[in-house]
Each structure stands twice: as structure tokens, then as C-alpha cells.
Image (tube, rainbow, N blue to C red; front, top):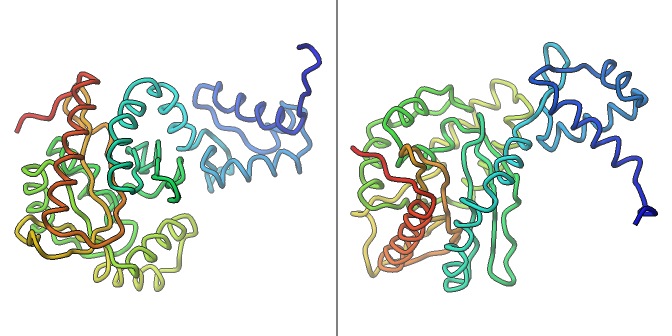
Length: 297
């Protein structure tokens, strides 16, 4: 086995990651990293640029230094809990994915972002990309605070929006109460709204000019995510559904994960209720398996 082929380019990437993840929170500039690791500055810059673009490293625009990024947190979290919460969630989602021929995700808040920790899909469908992330701030991220502690919901509301949108706080609080009672959320998103959210993820990293940010904010205010309330879902009428989501709680009653069925098609109110109840039951089973509990109100 001693003749196993080594890859010097890969070894350099590993060396950069090792240096930054074992530095106890210290950040490094390009020149210092290249010198310490014996890598040329152009090569080191290429590695840093790619790892930063993928979210594995974070670059401070003021100091031009690098440190661990959110994707490393997600990778570590998934590895640490790979034999617990994420795998338990996958086991509970697999029958629903097969029964409804759909896709599903397991996601969570990691730092200041929401990240996909696992994804699965029925044959012929493309699953979401594990590691995909977007900002945890209005207008994104409501489902990650709906079923947790009230303080977490208020803290999310107080975050600076990623775009200048107008929040209907009374509507959001009504949604929170209804989704807590139902145990799941039903979200409708128009095709235009889905494209805008995709642009939002890219734009957040590109610092759009103020005029462009304001325009996107206006559009998302009209075309953004919409949560159906139970009274709006007639059992025999079809409703366009983007996804159905339900929470997994930890031992302190905080939201640990969100399980989501990606629908992307019209469903009747009766079908929505059936899938929602099944997903909420699956999420509750994961919570119980992990020793978690829903928060007391």
C-alpha cells in the first residue's frame, strides 16, 4: 500500500485548510500563508480564491485576511451529527420521497446563513446541492424560526434585511401561530419569485448598487415567498405549492433542523394536509429519536 499515488495539488489545498482550521481563530493574509506553507503566492491565491468562492473560507475585505467559512461549519456539523440527526432525518424522509416521487432537503441555520446539510430525490429528479446556502435574514429564513423559541423569532425579525423589503409583522406573527398549531408550513412561490430568490443568493455576495437592491426589494415584496394559512386551502381546490416544511427540535426546544418536501406543483388542500401531517410526524419522530422536545409555550 506504500505505493499509493499522491496528489501534490490536493495536498496543498489540504495544507491551507489545516493551517486555517487549527489556528485557534487566528486569520492569515496571503503572503503569510504562502510563506508558512512553502507555496508560491499565485498558487496560494488560486487555492484561497476557490475555497472562498465555495464558502469553505471567509475573506475579510478590510484586512484582506482569511479564516474558516460557513461551509466548513456545515461540513463539520454534518460529520459530527452524520450518524445522528442528519441520518435520522434521511431515514424518515426516504419513504415520503418515494411515496410522492418528490425531492427533499435537510437544512439548518449555520452561523449567519441557512445551509442544506442533506438532499435526496426520487429517481429521475435532481436533488438540491448539499452545501447550498443563503442569508439568514429577512426576507429569507422564516421557517427556521417559526417553531422555536419566541426570542429566536424576534431576533430574526430584528436582523438587517438583505434587501430593503417591507415586512408585514402582524401577518408574520399570524403565520407563526398557525404553523405552530399545524406543525408544518406550506409555501407558495411563483416562478418569477423563485428566480428572484436565486438572484438574491448571488447578489448578496456581490454588493449590488443601492438602486438595484431597492428594485429587487420592491419585486420581492410583491413576488416573494407566501405562506398559506389553513383557511386559504380548500380541500378540493388545487393550490400551487413550492414546498412543505416541518421542524426538528433539540433537547433545549430550539429548532435544530428543517425537513422540507420540494413540491413545485399544484396540490389540492386535502393533498397538502396529508403530506403536511406526514412530514410533521416524520420530523417529530426525528426529534424524539434525538432526545429533543418542542418548546413549551
